[in-house]
Length: 587
Ligand SMILES: Nc1ncnc2c1ncn2[C@@H]1O[C@H](COP(=O)(O)OP(=O)(O)OP(=O)(O)O)[C@@H](O)[C@H]1O
Ligand SMILES: [Mg+2]
Figure 1 (cartoon, protein in one colour):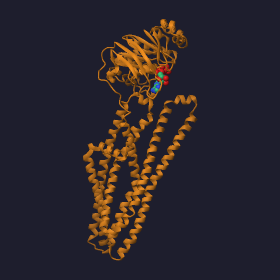
Figure 2: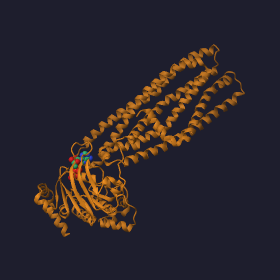
Figure 3: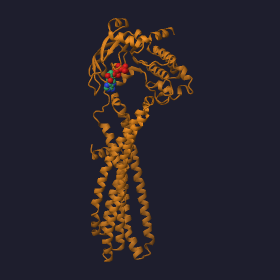
Figure 4: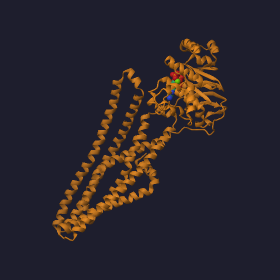
């Protein structure tokens, strides 16, 4: 996207604020005109008061000066206020658009992309645009002011203005060159900042892994490397920023020298009044002074363009599509789920994760899926909820391909309970209610007690209003599990998907979670990624998955006699559960 297009897009966003922008622009013209008046008024001041010593002007001219400054100030404030107002509004809107887009993206986008990068767009880039927008007007103001002042200069002396205009191309070119550099380094800096954010995000999320592997030093080195890069780029950008003003001032100095030389000789020869020369010099200084500050304005505009480029490219990117959704509401009671010749390959992967998967789950059945790690168990779940779509084949619920259903109704129909789910950093009540409607306290307690969560929640300092700390760290793994089970109970899904914990919790916690799950499963249709012997013994069907294919399906006894992989898995994974199972039955 080129610079002009980006600006055009930005202006489009500003359209609803047209009337404000027009008044701001008029005020801008007011600022320019009064600035011109200021340069102009120098001439009578010099000639009448200082040279001719005419006392009748002693009151009128100073009052004129005060009035000019006053009017100029009012225009200036008004213009700034309107622009800032529009910028804040546009930015709020842009931020919300981005969030709406991002939250509706398919899950796969979050698997692949770096979360820090997305965060940086919503927070940093948008802020850059906000700071840039009022500057656009400031620059317009400076351009108009410059024209007005050049007008005043021409009026005072045609020849002198021509001399001085020789210096101008030099200034324009330098400005252009420095801007180009600024833009480049702003771009680089932004993406480095995003890199750093994603490193931080990753590390903070995996603190336990880092600490237990004792790789802090290594992580510090990695961070420092990026950090040094950022320092280098920032320094370069600042150097260009710094150079802008002095270079323009040097040009001003050269211009002033030339003007004094020629102008002085004109005054001595009597071809120009001293007032005319001073008015001219004032116009000159007023032209150059804001140019010196353009550096700062530039850096902001350049940054705003960079930010806008990144924001628009995210909003427009054709690869970044919202999830496709069907049209039919899925609400009739669950009858059956059928996987028909389903194949699936992850985007960007060469190996299919699932090959020719066929199975049926009927109402009320508990179907266990087992298989070695990486067999594709979780992938099956992701296909049922349409986080991903099959590459080939069909998944049917009640005889209809699931892609025909609206995503919303499909996902409301299904609950997934997995280990390691995180809770939101809000009250326990809201965590349980998440995704369902408000209910009264009695019902909430009832659900919590079926999930074996009631008693521990009651014992917390604020009961149901206790805030779960970030990533649920204040609660134990088993407690979190039970809150998630309560949430699923409340959602009362037609189809339940359960990913059992691989690592056992401590005995008491494990026991409570198991009882809660038993309650959750009662009378429901469920697909369970099984890691416990009791689950597979109680299952109506067991699907044995191996490297993306179904090795066999049936019930425990059948499989034990005819499926080698099942026998192996049983001996390796589940046999050790036997004692536990007996213990659970006794309890
Ligand atoms: N987002 C992804 N992108 C690419 N490949 C993936 C992705 N997620 C999983 N895979 C691959 O798909 C295959 C199946 O993974 P899946 O997560 O379904 O295994 P699993 O049976 O659930 O294993 P586990 O018991 O370890 O959870 C694996 O080879 C894995 O590397
Ligand atoms: Mg898995």
